[in-house]
Image (cartoon, rainbow, N blue to C red; front, side, top):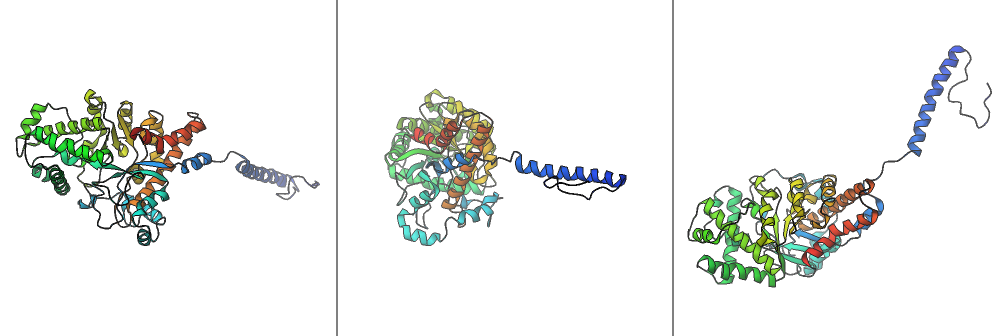
Length: 439
């Protein structure tokens, strides 16, 4: 046998007899399969990236509106970034991201080297500088009060109002566990502050409503608040029932009512606050996620508890935002988006969960009622290692990746066009919040 130049390479020796010929065929066949496999690997369809490259580039360029965060002043003594700081809680099993030395914390920290020196250099301009590093145009600041460097237009105020619905003796509620004890001490302190600012010491329910509740909300509105925040899920169930005023007035006269009676007063006051917010044009934000601490009532935070509020005709002028997207009740909360006054954000989920997990949830929501889904970070000074800036950076990174994954899946499934994908990305990161708050 003569092998011509340019023919198949001599992968095995030429056959000399029948046995060699059989062996030759076997080896030739094996060699052919190997070469074919290499060819198919090189020339066949390659695995597609999780995110369409052009879409990823488009998402990276969008200046976002962060619907929920707790930015701290450039002042180490600042404690008004939350009405209920979580560092007052009993130790519990922390999510992985918050554990000392977590890979996520290390990655985030690399983007803020020499933080102390930068804070000193930037001064009151430091919070806005942080937003520039994150690609965030505007951050809604959940704070007891605003302060130097955390001011419009880069920061918009979300005030705290839980103290308004717990006006009586809270010692019995505080006795449930150590977390509640710490929380109600803080709520009592904030309540005293609101009463002092209103010049109120005592009176009937009508006096309390007209001299404390309404003036406090109006003052917050005049101070720039675009929304109010209820952390009620840390203090009680989210089931706020409709209660007649006469019933609430009767409970008001009791110094230390039973739990059942006190809940009726709280429910009445919640409805009153929500109605006033509708009148004033402020949204109502509610914590709807499994919260921090080992005593948190996860079942009580189920967003389905809020459905009667959304269905109440007297509250249709009030816009409700279910902060943190209701995790782990992500399917239940999605069903509520058809309510005309119900919205949600992805804050905290983009901090605690991988992008692949959040992408699946976003795919579901964006296929259902996409104009009600908002971006948020829950940037918060969790620890020295995970400050509000690191937390916001990590959440922003994860959120953009999850959004890119969800929209790419929808693109490849033929559910949306490239133009619609870009539109949805901008809606979630910016336009939905802009429309909701009228920025």
